[in-house]
Image (cartoon, rainbow, N blue to C red):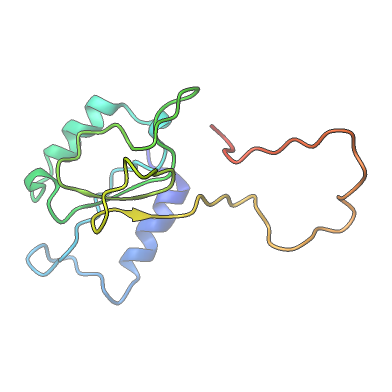
Length: 136
């Protein structure tokens, strides 16, 4: 099962002028295995699926996207898959898990978030509750 967010990401890559369907011409491989939210994948099964890819070679030249690492309620700072030398683009890295000149740190994005002020929603309240991780 692939999330609509990962489908949109793959679609953007495929529609890019840099995309090639030829593995011999490709510099980076992006697997069509959805790893955006670790809470929605089976770690062992997903790791085995990645390792079975024809050009995997211990993850070399592969880019894995992961926005939510770990599983509720104990989220970790890095996806807990066996990725070998795969590059990871994602949110939640810290100074110990981020591999400098190797990984790509991305801001956590929510399609629910809107830029700018929404009229009629700001009132004096006793309490304010926010959540940065929706739909977990």
